[in-house]
Length: 299
Image 1: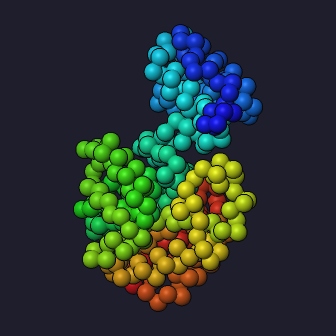
Image 2: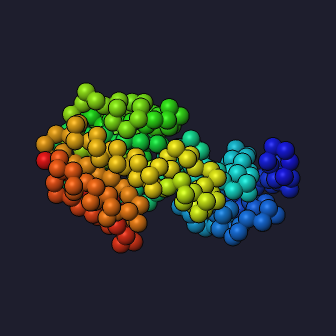
Image 3: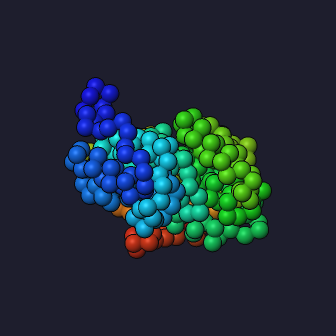
């Protein structure tokens, strides 16, 4: 690699012709840098850049490839060779019905969090009018809620101003396709919403402890923002503070929905249960059958 971190073997152009040529060239570039499964990686990069299903490129190999697409593929392949997660390399991530712009200022949305949104929507009624996504990051939760349900307002907060900018950009992209207005506020946890009354609070907080950081996969540990990953006190500091603050803003029977570390679901459920301001505490499962979410109602 050169001083800028760009692999020395990467060409600045690819042979422009067909999608098949682009796939072959991208595969060769990734293979030269020792990327595992270069053919699969190339298919995913090309599909992401073109915003098509994963195997579309292989099935349409004789289709023309434009110079702009080729340049975007080169940039993404360079980032993958440097170890960047695919969503950062291509600048986008799929989440439920949305394709979000993402970069290393925000956490990459996970499929587990899609289930969190699903479980929240199942509990929404016409009386669920004002909801908040705390620690919005890319805006995945807030924008999905606003896209799929009619609320009076969806609030989205984040302590990172960079994250607010990313989320607001995503909101502007979807524009009138959102069923609900989304309002972004900068600040820690519920502090920006102190004057509001909410029918639901949803949060995917940082829940990795500092001691666990070295054990994370390199593409998570070295690329994703530590502010969105790490929490003190065995990974529970942020969750504990959220549980403490939420009742002040929740209406009676208001919903608290939190994603948790599967190893700590029982601890969080107990934390909520012993707080006399909550009732109907539930531990819910993700798609793999692991205890991933804690839900509760305000008394």
